[in-house]
Amino acid sequence: MAKIRIYQLAKELGMHNDELLKLLDEMGVAYKSHASTLEDSTAETVKELIGEQRVAEAARRAEEARKAIPHRPPVVVIMGHVDHGKTSLLDYLRKSRIAEKEAGGITQHVGAFEVKTPGGTVVFIDTPGHEAFTTIRARGAKVADIAVIVIAASEGVMPQTKEAIAHAQAAGAKIIFAANKIDLPNADINKVYTDLMQLGIVPVAYGGDYEVIPISARTGQGIDSLLETILLTAELEDLRADPKAEAQGVILEARVDKQAGVLASLLVQQGTLHVGDYVVAGEHWGKLKAMSDSEGTRRSEAGPGSAVQVLGFSELPVAGDTFNWVPDQIAAKEITEERIAERKSLETRPNDGGRARNLADLM
Ligand code: GTP
Ligand code: MG
Image 1: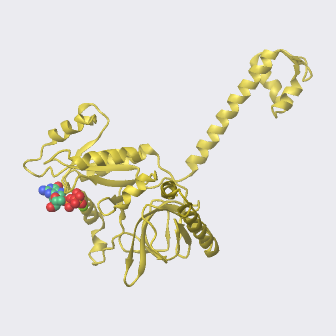
Image 2: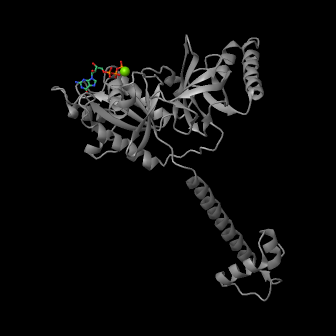
Image 3: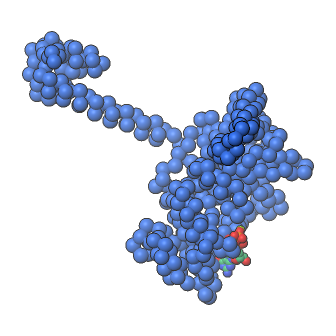
């Protein structure tokens, strides 16, 4: 291989001659001028060094760009065995944090709600109300950052506790355990610990990684500590979302209200939704006529981590589906019509029923 001259190598690497000469000085390589030739091994070393520098620079820029994106509230799903106190925990959080507004008598069921704490906002999702949540997980959409698994300390781990753990793990959510009902005389926190350890889950109290916070949804005991653990976990996760991106999120729930029409609960994951925006979700689209939050307050916009109820879908969107902002009605119609046509063509494909169904499931 012909030896390479300094200016040739500089050109090849897209550098100025001076830059390369400086690097060679730093490397202690002797040369007369930029027309001098370099040993093959020297040229190779230069290429490697420059490559490494560029990778490091790109990583630094990417990190800078990431840090420029603001933090977003954590999304926390509450799961657990039947009657272990999930809704009671949520009720306690609601009463203690948003009781003033609720005193007006207008409690709107949004499916998910934002709780303002001194340490920041947290978005909670109650699972029992949301059969849809299974769909969300099945589609791999990572809606929840954190799963709070409620275990009644009077009963310990039960079948649906295990199922909840499996779901949370599959969804890649961080798990925090809330050992509830510790106000009851038969509450046994040690049984909760040993039950969990039998599943290979080692609580912090036993030197493991899993927080098990004793709480009472009835008396409120330990709930501040649970909130603190949630906020700390969220902080470590360094959750961020760009409020200026095109709005995107998940349909949590949808129902028809006799008077209002189709009401959908949305979780905004990135970007900002505005009243008047067009969105598509699966095969359905809507123009957002009105938005309200979990306190029933009307909102004109909803940024990342907002859980809002919206009016404006003409047909029921499917819970668990992703929604996306689109610029106008033409785009909304085109996209949904395309999706419908695609599904129909898969459904009518001869001798391919099973596969078509599976493919449709994946859409
Ligand atoms: P599903 O949604 O049906 O799965 O139940 P859940 O987990 O939401 O339980 P829920 O909050 O409805 O509570 C079930 C029962 O336990 C209710 O009678 C609550 O009053 C009671 N309960 C919940 N938390 C506590 C608690 O901390 N202490 C006591 N003593 N009772 C509680
Ligand atoms: Mg419940």
